Image 1: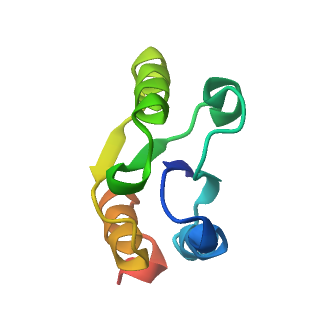
Image 2: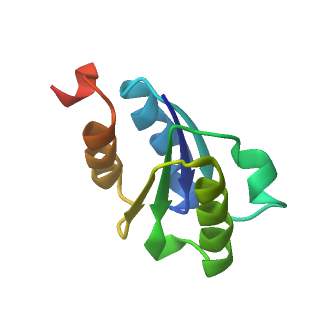
Length: 99
């Protein structure tokens, strides 16, 4: 499963990727906008938006791409590691980290 995370804390990027790896997911993390997000995002299985720490412009860009490719979107106000764990447990099917 591939996951794109938009928003979050810059110091937590490696932690986000490690958590995704525990759930058997490949992750791309975009905490701030560097160029066109839609060219870098690709077509993941799930888009996670950490709404508290992301600009409105990035949200609009990410949601537009999600609608274009029918990508499920999960919005979460908190950008903590436990919030990411909870989201991945809800969306991944039968991973060993959730049991």
